[in-house]
Amino acid sequence: MIPFESVEIHGELRERVLQNLNRLEEEKYQPQNVFLTEEQSGNWPGDTEGRTILGLVMDAQASKRSPIYLERIIDMIPSKLNKKGYMGVIYEGKMSEQQLSGNGWMLRGLCAYYEWKQDEKVLEYIKSIANNLFVAGKGFYTEYPIDPNFRDKNVGGEAGTIEVRGTDKWILSSDVGCLFIGMEGLIHAYAHLKTPEVKAVIDEMFAKLREIDILKIQAQTHATLTACRGMIRYADITGDYSYVEWAEKVFNLYKEHGMTENHANYNWFERFDTWTEPCAIVDSYMLAVQLWQHTENPVYKEDAELIYYNALSHAQRDNGGFGTDNCPGIASQENCLHPHSYEAHWCCTMRGGEGLGSAVQYAAFIREDTVYLPFFRDCELNLMLENGKLSLLEKTNYPFGTFAEFIVTENQQGKVTLKFPFMSWMENLTLLYNGEPQKLVKEKGFLALTNKFKAGDTIQVNFEMRLRKQKTLNSTNTKDSQYKMYYGPLLLGDEEIATGEYKNMLFNVNGRELTPVYHLMNNKMRHKEYKKQILFDE
Image (cartoon, rainbow, N blue to C red):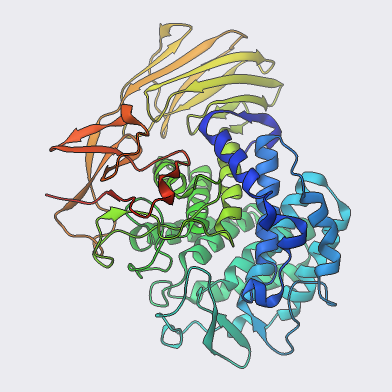
């Protein structure tokens, strides 16, 4: 994956990043307000603080704009840690999975900040949280309750709460499995600490995670997908890629039992009458790209596209934050997609920063003298390859149009292979190099072109996309007779109250006027009457 320094993003993604950064600098997220008491956080110590730091770090690097309040937040951390050096109350002989989850987000945010700024005092905060909370809890993780009959599957709101049920050693959450959000934070810390004590705890936590029947316990999808991302990071650290195979199996289980019809998430596996959570949408998007990166299976690249345009983009509100949506299907007795809450300001708005920042980094990947461009993005790329720098300017009207152009502005590398994206919904592709048609060399979801490119060279990718009818994703929560309509990666719906956005993307299907569920922070999400039908009957 390329560093942030190698990409300058333009277009709709830049607008999303900047608006999210603006939101994270409003009063709620400023230093005097971002640190919460145990009561204010709902027993999620470190959660708001860690996610906010992470979102600011990602947005700032993605946009190249310095955040106003981040340094002050970092400076306040020592005064907010307890006497043992982590967030929240000190439990004797007992662990709280919400506390571990919240401190996991503190570790994620602090690790991201440390990687950016190389501030040694922040590494000390990482050490104290990792050692004095997580490592000190060694032995407890083997006794984490995983019996599905023990967990109450009928409780929980958009913000998880402490469950009435618990054990002598565990304070449990309605966000079933959020312990493993903490594990993912600890894995990020291990990338910098590399101590055998931290590794032993990660191995103990993962051993317990592998014992869980995710479907029967109806684990929270956010917690599960976060754990998968953690294990991919762990695979990269340890070199043991069996962890990637485990994450791949779980992601495919998620697609079948946890993904909604607009490629978002049910908040818990197979609890279909709930709501989406953009935190999990971000996880699923990042995980899909990471699985493509490790397996080169083009299906995961297409999963990422569908999640980005139909779930992540639908969930971002006009204030730059992120809100939850309903889950159309049998359980909710709805065929329409609409907001469930305007904004989940306590978690999802901050995680949106990580999702959008990751999308910026995903503009290109490199391997030796090969540049992979998995998604069309308006951007400038300055990539350091084996023998020198390669710079490209990319312009595209995708997914609303069918054109992308790449202009070489510098090439010190010499011979380079460029791999341009193509998806299963693209037809009649043509590849032009300086205006001359090229033979199409298709390789695992890419068009490959190798040459000693020089400054001023242009490569154009043209294609066609058509309306297509697809079966639903979840056969349990939809009828056999139901279907959905797409144009390229864009899910289409019938909007009862027209907003005027994307009038050029209006399709007439059996007398219905369909438009994308995608929107660019349109204020229609503020209107209670807004809804868009996405499930249709034969």
